[in-house]
Length: 486
Image 1 (cartoon, rainbow, N blue to C red):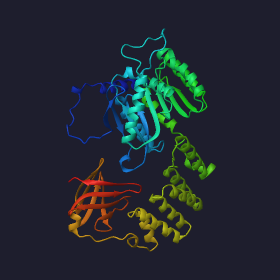
Image 2: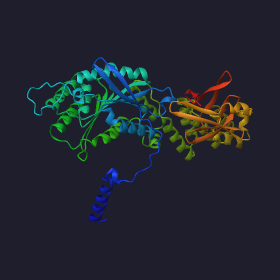
Image 3: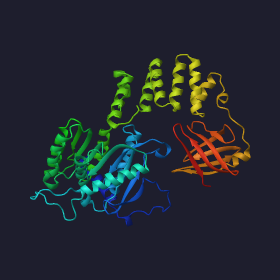
Image 4: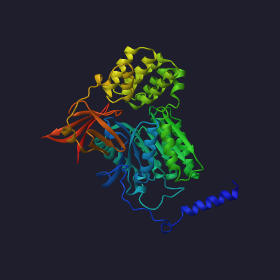
């Protein structure tokens, strides 16, 4: 496309974007179903002598497990919670990070709370108008009031990451230098380290001398800012990088503005902080160093964090799939046995182990693993199919009952737990359940216990005084009670 044509297209596109609301066609005003990104809470702070609010975004599956989670503390929560929550969830979904809670602190007086006191009498850049110097008090609020409340109300790990932009980035560095035990890592985005004649740069020099055994990580970025803004950040990053136990990554992106640099910094920063967790090519790691390489890597991660972090199931399952394709069943079996040790209630590894035995014509062991699969997931269609090929009726392994229609009709209704709604219907003499867009027939094991094909969960209907009151859902690692609401 010629340059003139490209400019014309851009001009047209800009004009379309800038159309006033009155110039756009009116769309339908249908009521929609809200999508909730988090919940806002309020806390009466004695330290701040005011009411403070914060937003908590839970990782997917939080309400369907009893796991504990690392915590991101996000400054400027109102402005940043949407994109940070989306970034963290996407990194988890693609295997680049573990799931994390995001706690976004909302502002009352941003400048006051995020800036340290002025220590220099002759300032190269005077501070802006308004209250300043409240960082020490705000840090006390976070450490002594907010974090304990979050820990009480949510299943948290001691692993915390602090994210701040501009004055928030200044505050992140201030926090590292004054309460280094609070956070395992920091993302400081275009930090205003020009503040107080770059006073924190001098403090950083002393800090690394006094904290030789500190283990932490700092990801610091800068957009197209220069002068004392860039200089202060470079000095702090350089000082911290000289410490043996502090990992530092400084990125300067002149093509980003002070505002646009935030989203890129969070995404790249979270990737960098979790680079040990994410294995780009599990097959290459296995072929180079074997199964032991995964064990050693996650042993190091566990030691650093202070609790066990398992090798992700999907990582090892990727390796075993490759080994089966390469006709190396003995190695695949070794990997699968390790997966079962780590995740004993997961049906997938048992099924794949059965397939591996089939590839070796060891039908006896294969039959045993397919039966183990059904014990964990009665509706596993793959295991049912493999057993049928072996001449074994799956119903002889997982017995199915005949339940009177009058009993089945009593289970019809709407059941709710957390943000999940299950609708049970009775159609053509059969019981069905719909969750979202997924609808399955429920197959009875008894009058009250049911399962569904390729749904890795079991269901038990609970009654009181002859009326159904709730539904117990059993997942591989967690059970919950869904209350009947209609």
